[in-house]
Image (cartoon, rainbow, N blue to C red):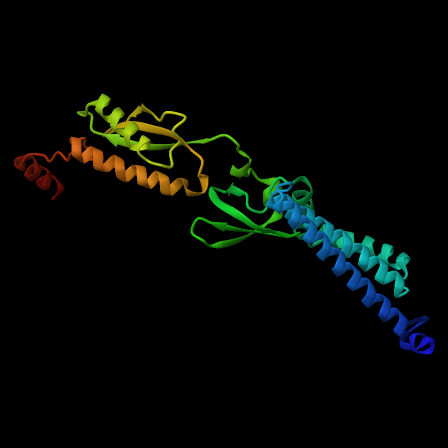
Length: 284
């Protein structure tokens, strides 16, 4: 048995890869897989008990997984007899290459580590970036997968979450305020409009009942009085759908009570017929 393990399989230069080395590599990989599976199972139990939320469990799992695999790779290289002095010397050239050619990939990689360690964004969070609201589904070292309200999956480089302004709706513990703008005719009863706007919001089940909706005259438009309806809600991922429901209700109430929503109008003044003839004669 000893002779079998000591039997060289591959010889390159002064180094030999023996059956023993392959067995050690396989054992290291198996141990790493078992440890990762055990930690994953432990985190799932903690999540079910309420000691960790889904995002925290996912972040810890990813960090531990990357850490264990890094250790496993180092141990494997040592077992194979790889010279670390050569690796350190080669890493200097690699860092130069990172700085010159693939700095964006390196930036995304570091940003992924920051996101996982700091927990600024976790799986299940609802975020808004570049005006688009989406739910985080998966965080990798280089990219993050989110899914928008239209159910389309988007792959976003991690550096955008670190370098750009990102709204994390899941970090907001209190209710969030939303608003709807609508224009009405200058002849409208403003008190009636104010009451109808508030009623449309109060009647919607997704609007908070703890804070009363408010309606105010926002501005004097070219063709209409601009009102703003403000209300509070919790379901930020469905905010646009809630706004649409309230707009339908507002339109129905306005039609019922005769409140008009004007559209832009332009008045064209034409010169008298004789003036046009004179102008035509001059042009000739």
